[in-house]
Structures are given as structure tokens and as C-alpha cells.
Length: 167
Image 1: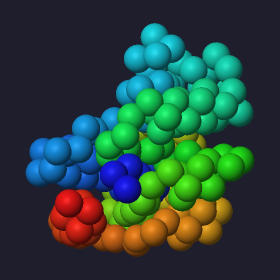
Image 2: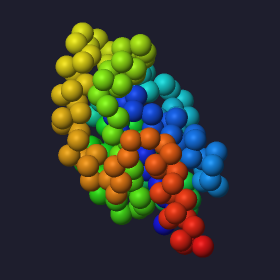
Image 3: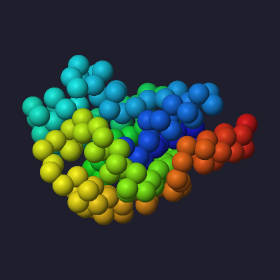
């Protein structure tokens, strides 16, 4: 199984971890948000503004399934809400190995407060409260991941041992 999924809260470091792992393995990196933007020719924030979150989640689901079907080997950095939409987590679990990057909420809050460009945080006054509630509602989905990790080095170590045992 050579399909790996990075799951976690916005600003948990999924994309950073994906770049690190891709550089240290022969796995192609996809970032679901970037794939959506390329396919639709619009930034995520504009899709959110124009069509709303529900429509965005449908687009996200479509791109997720497309990448899974099209490629045999990859690492895919998912949007923070991807595992929580309809059957996405079941699709992820059936298709490959998932890693929940479980970062400290203080780290995430600090990172988001420094850069509020993420569409999900537009217009939110109390970022800390919002993130805590978001984490609470999403954690049950995230916890269904195959591995719960704290950093990119843990992920790389697990992936290397999995891919090594398959050769």
C-alpha cells in the first residue's frame, strides 16, 4: 500500500510534513487544496465565498476520489475538514494509510493568529475558542487514522518501514 494521507487541523503542518516526506522518499506529493485550485482555476477562499462550504466539500470529495483513482503511489496532504465530510474518512481508510498529525492546540492557535488567510477563519473574532470547538468536533474523525503522530519525522519513519517491507 503506497497511498499515504496526512490528516489534521488547519495549520498543523500537513503540507510541511508532506514536502519533507516527499523529499525523503520516492512518493509524489499532492496537496488537496492546491489540486482543487488548479482544477477549478480559483483560490479556495473564492470558492468558499462564491459557493459556500457545502459546495466546497463536494468539490473536495471529487478531487480526493480522482487522485486516489488516478495515482498508485503518493502522499496527500488533506484539508483539515476533508476527513469529516460524508464518507471521506471511509474512502481514505479503504485506499491507504492515514496519519493524524496531532499538534498542540496552542501551536495551531498561535500559527493561525499570525496568518488568518485560511478561509475557514474569515470573520472569526475569538480564534482560540473557534479552534478548540473545531478540534473537539473533528477529533473523532481524525482519531480513525491508522497512526497518530506528533511530527514529520515519525511519519517518515513509519512510511519508510512500510515501503521497505513491501519490497
